[in-house]
Length: 161
Image (cartoon, rainbow, N blue to C red; front, side):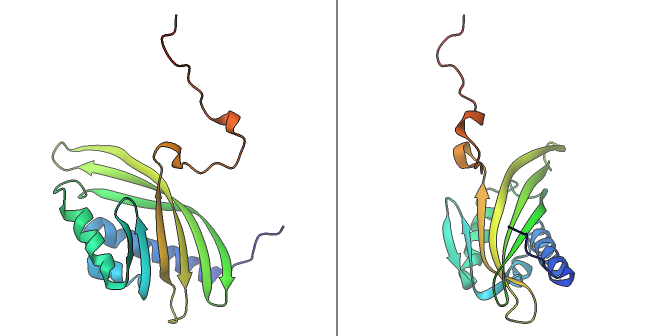
């Protein structure tokens, strides 16, 4: 099946939307985050749940401030966008993310996490915005895999002699 052809302007605007979101997310700018969503947009982040509209602010208040010093210094990097038109004016967008962390207390850098986004963007307002965002953190068996299970590690149990 051929891949959908996405207009270059739409592709770049959606990628820029991700960039605006990441900058807002990584600098604690909740107003700028909200500008990336439709008024009735949704955001799913587990284990906290799904937040709608202005309640998305509550999620970020919790994530940024429940553990002081924990979020400062992060960079969410999006890449490998897969865009599929849903219907007129909407686009399903999958992208990988990696989170780099600069620990301000210890002045060290490390990879904090990996995962992917599963989002729907809409251009109903004349500009691309997130209609829904699902953050898929890779933890345990949550890593996407459609191949055969034999690719997974089956470590031996018990003591190896």
